[in-house]
Amino acid sequence: MESELVNQYAVVAYVHGPLAFFVDSLRGEFTPGCPHSAHVTVLPPRELHGSEQEAYDRCNAVLADREPFPLTLVRVSLFPETHVIKLELSEQDTQRLRDLHESLNQGPLYQNERFPYTPHITLCMNGAPSETNEKLGRARQRWAEFGGSGTFWVDSLTLVRQRKDETWADIAELPLSHPVPVYS
Image (cartoon, rainbow, N blue to C red; front, side, top):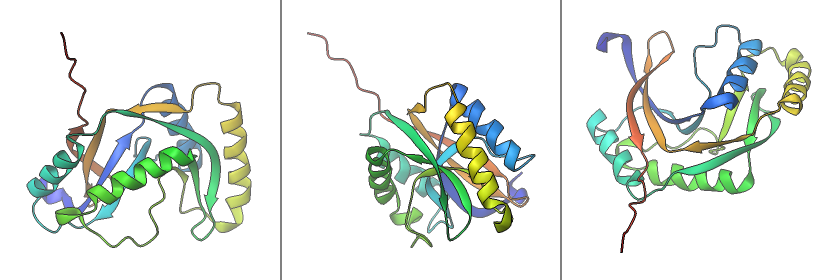
């Protein structure tokens, strides 16, 4: 198994429940056979500056005092420079994840990002630019028709590692701290 992996790591927050089913279905419509489960990337792919254990320890140290939190998806939009169709988060949630990204993007996980960090869920990438507007319109229509909640809870993150076939393997679940009840 180790020989199938490459030195590219990321940290993601998986989406769960009906929202994940909807997003995975929509992604599959645009990219048939898409092997990646619905997620928000907190740290984009990067090489480690240290060991996997050091990266794991860094994540746990940052997350130890962070409580679970909700994220709300608000609209379908486009990264115009790359033609990536995405689901955007609310402004408040975007800032929350930028702060978390900044805290995690240090030590063994540090990377000077290629693009400014913009948390989102990717719906379609690597498509032909000539098809982008049609797909964007379809994605907006499907999002408008979605009858469920666009909010999901994040109670853990996951450290993932890229395989040679460009899929990702979950390496470790990274729980956020849970408040301990105080009884008097």
